[in-house]
Figure 1 (tube, rainbow, N blue to C red):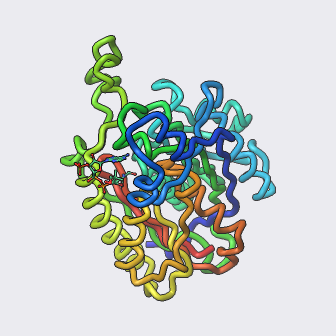
Figure 2: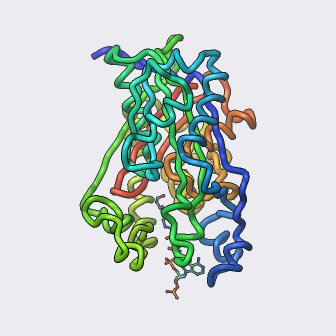
Length: 330
Ligand code: UT7
């Protein structure tokens, strides 16, 4: 086997819609309160896209920033791997719409459906594309418009989700030791009904019945998902650290999927990391599914919490169930 790292994250860009929905706004719409939401989740506000702001458009803005950061243009991109649970259309892949918007005419473009850990799954695929020689430069995108699949009449889920996009340029590793040191991805489809959209897909195509039953929106058994998330995130941390051949104490920053502050705290505790070594920004964005890790990573970089040589641990869990992790030398 060839030694890692094959691939490095060269730059990052993010885009969030300007529209803000606060807990107080939600308390005016539903039987809930700012206190309850903050105490149970850590979320204070989230961004909501307008009808005109598509996933492809948010992704384009994030990608343009990432391309600029890497000092390359869209025509330098060999592949676009876009993780989303909210494609703009079911056909074609949103990555192809993104490709057209960017003018990345040389690229192969496709979507990944892996829910909240979609960014980690996409990173894993990108690393494989680079290691196999298929691509030299890959745009990895996590982008969501979860507001379109959220039931704003269901207080158990409406408080959680937000919209946004993040993108990284992944390239062949340029310097010794810099790049993706490990990835770990896992799923358990037996637990799918604990977090899913029952209607609107090919099993139960969109119809008046689906809309009346509101089954095109996300349904979640929150408590069960919470317990599974804590266990899976812990396992994923252990596995990424083991595969990278590093010690947990060497991790400079944990960048977890931003679903719930209590899940993040349990994950950090399991990994033996103090909260000072954990990036948290769900108070501002809520759960943005596949966009949450790049949004948190970009903020950590702009706050000076990530520098050259920083050892990062990414970890996420979501519908499927799916979970994954990665150790990266920045
Ligand atoms: O990103 C993908 C993975 N997703 C997650 O990781 C989410 C995991 N789950 C969670 O984050 C939490 O389970 C929630 C935040 C969704 C819920 O928190 P919880 O502490 O597990 O609450 P619960 O579902 O056990 O509900 C406790 C009580 C219930 O009332 P009773 O039965 O005790 O009378 C709920 O009806 O809180 C009630 N409740 C609310 N009250 C005020 C549920 N939602 C709300 C709300 N406002 N928005």
